[in-house]
Image (cartoon, rainbow, N blue to C red; front, side, top):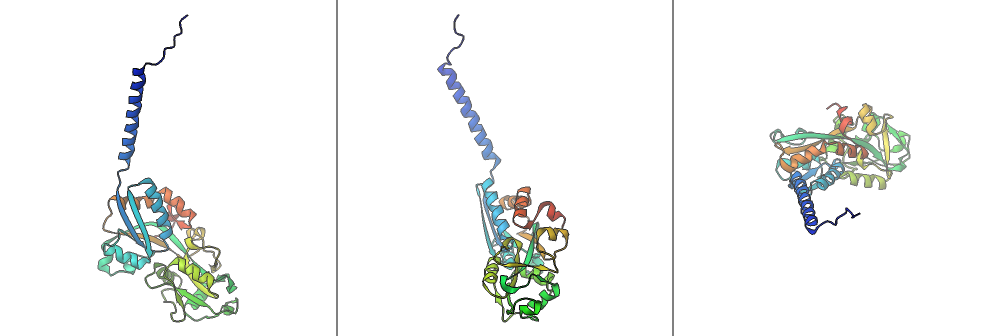
Length: 290
């Protein structure tokens, strides 16, 4: 009985190779056409928003390799001024543009609210106080109480660490915590970013300040406010008041890579990452009153 098996001919093998190569080229072409997004996106502004925007930019560039995104801080006021002047594509801010810019400039900007952020009152670990009432917090920042012992803490002079006037974090703090009253100046320190605030408070005996929850770590003490801890859960529940919407402004309606990135900022991928970094996004953000 003859063996029914026949060796493949050279012509057959060549034909199969050609078909395989055509299929591979077709797949490569499909992938290339699926991501034809190109361009650059420049972003500046809020240092409180900077960590989530930087990570989202890295995630976006992993998907769209022909897009380059640069993210810088500088403060909300700087971001708003630069986007209004056309110096950057997106200006990030902790406060609405009308709070920082003349109305004629603010009207040229389009607001994209994609994430909310909380802020914590922090103190040096040696102050001996874990909780402040809102009135006590105001008394400290208005210069009416100058020693921690008057609040049941250590016999240590209170060192107020302020943010500059361009800071959106400061604007939120003044509005919500101080009821619009400006904090004491003079014998205080001023730091221009959340990271600098964290370092200064951790290293300065008696220091107190405030920063974005995303920057919080165990080098400082996060103070309760009227007995409520500064957490995302408490903000969503409506029991902790220090938070604001994170604004991403463009000059006019965005297009191209800028629009694609802003759409991505509202995606489920960024929402999941936001929760891991103590921001408020996705279904949590929907529960907040705008």
